[in-house]
Length: 214
Image (spheres, rainbow, N blue to C red):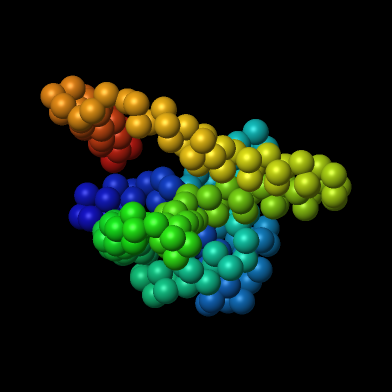
């Protein structure tokens, strides 16, 4: 948390939380419209240190309005670095809590029945919602700009199919999964390979953050 606070204090726009935080604070403290040009300018100043040029990402607040309500408690922080650190700590707590609930849901689903399937589905939605909500917001924003019911239906259908395709594929290929090789020594080496890959990615981003800090 201390490292994240140090890096984000120098590079405040390093993630998609910053536009939501600025928009929420503007709305709470001044009553300003989160979608207004003034709020967009504030976000650009925080990320670029100047107004964005036409060929750059405008980084405007483009999320559903209810996302502002989720970031309002973070506006009690005096700066974004503190708000970011608190948000990451809360996210870590949610991840750990979700892991515990997922384990219980798996045991409930293993017993079979409609109730078990419902609990597992609800847990899957809880895990997928934070990742899918920003994309869903962007899709809905784009749909509103097209002002076409046909295009809107096509975009949302494509989005829903993309979200469900993997789950459908896994459900239909359960027999193939059962015929996969049983766990053994090779699983340990697969875990080690992915662990090394994750450490490499973490080191890469840490070096990048250090370059920005310097």
